Amino acid sequence: MSYRVRKNDNVVIITGQEKGKTGKVIFVDPDKGFVKVEGRNLVSKHKKPRSAQDPGGIHKFEGNIHISNVQLICPSCDKATRLAAKIEGDNKSRICKKCGAILEFKAEKTKKKDKEKTVRESKSSDSRVKRTRKVKEESSENKEEQN
Image 1 (spheres, rainbow, N blue to C red):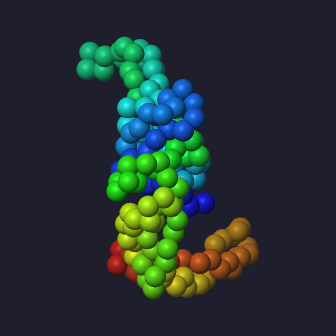
Image 2 (tube, rainbow, N blue to C red; image 1 turned 45 degrees about the horizontal axis):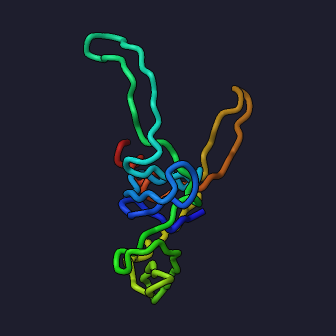
């Protein structure tokens, strides 16, 4: 699933222990639906010293916040807002729902066509199995250069 919150966006946390606080997004995990916000949701980890170069102690770092618990701050109106997506030709842009300002343009990527490649894999010494799989053009070109 694609989310409209991206790295380096300013967000406000809308629920939880850090409610109402703002920060900059430093990491987005779209597969799990989590973000890390700079200086927010700090987690302490106790680390045992392993050597003289690796001292132990209590280390603090940013923990995950679910992406539904943050809301983007519009840079033009400085309010927490939802986003709309607008597609004009090849450009896709994010738009503030409150003031209508365009946040950024994003050109859509062109998709490369996958080509089918037949691969022979040995199942046992007597018989061979023929399998087809899709391989991107770049990876097949790289293999040819290596050989």
